[in-house]
Image 1 (cartoon, helix red, strand yellow):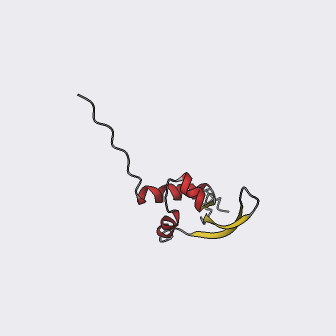
Image 2 (tube, rainbow, N blue to C red):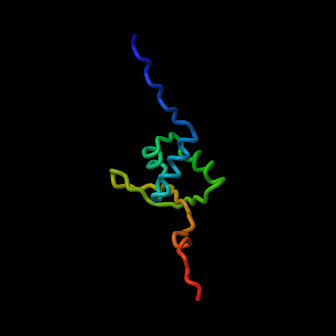
Image 3 (cartoon, rainbow, N blue to C red):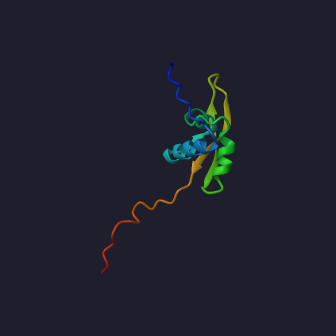
Length: 93
């Protein structure tokens, strides 16, 4: 008897949002980068959903094509409060 194949993990919107958020925590990314890095067919929809709970800006940047022409593309940037030092114990004087 053949063993049953392992079911594939469905790449639903929840997984896509998580992947996009994790990717943006590493730094800004374009739509094309998010599509490839996060396996998200339409990252714009996931960004729209993430904006309900996270501050994500869209900046414009030029992307140079192989023929030397350039296009303006959106660059998504996750805004985070830098509170890395907030946990340091401060000496009271």
